Image (cartoon, rainbow, N blue to C red; front, side, top):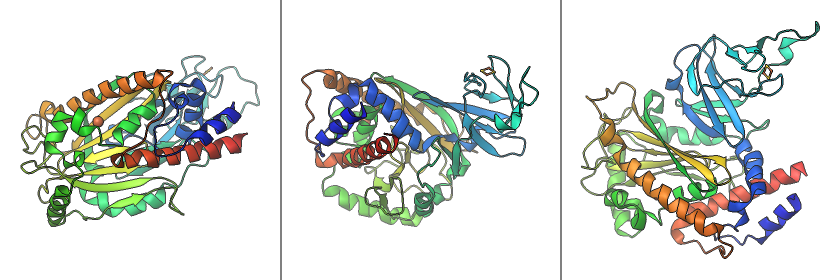
Length: 404
Ligand code: FES
Ligand code: FE
């Protein structure tokens, strides 16, 4: 099979959509999880979801499930949700507070840090210390929690260091999640991610978004708009710099990182229906600059930071052609609902936009399922997809070589 896969990769000509099998083959899907997702850093949540000892949440993707919990020493740990006895899922709840994790099958009992505390009726020489839940790599960046299940995860630290001065004024560590919504779509995860990576579709598909966001229009008028905004950005305390690390071009960073602030149209302070503010200013920002920042921390983790709220996106594979588009809204942690923000206004734009995306991504999958689909050429506005394809294929090729 892996031979067939290599042939498939070699057929890909670049600058076009992927061959059909990448979106329709169960074998490719299994390889995606095993060789791409399991070797990627994934954004799973915010530290403010687990403020107290015993707080936990579970993050699932593909065939994997990971528990993220705060232990008795106040440390946050991540470990696989796979029992070391005979492999059952240990934790069934999605989130909560607990003293211990007890496997529902034969009641092996684990501590909050994943170590095995007790197992019934085992041989006398059974050593609990050898049967902790498997640790998963974890990084916390300004309150955002990332995990990677690989034994040798890609180097995330170098890129985070470069991103640090650009995101620091927003004080992401002082955010709280106020709403999350799931838009399940009947499509392969790559189609959902690819859709997010380009704004070629924004003008025809997103009426509401296009009214206020300039990204849908790459014309020269926007360069002027952007320069004008950047001046304001620096006045309000943002750096005005951009960051673009492509892993194929970088020697010492093993992931893609991207940071760019782009302008909203005149009259818009933030991504609201009226143009007016939606919540209190984030972090140390002194005022609204009329912009929003596109932030990518590895291809799979995308954020949009307005001056008063942050949106996080995930495109989580559930099966070959089922993907959960998860959208998460965050505001500063001291903001009060009803007084400082209201959820309906806050979520309006990206709720409509995600519904549009759900529709167009499902149509994309239907077309690609046809035996008559052939990969088509990408436009200049779809450069993000080219970068994704290059990195994705390189990673799959490397990992399948190692494993064959
Ligand atoms: Fe967990 Fe048996 S599988 S205790
Ligand atoms: Fe879209």
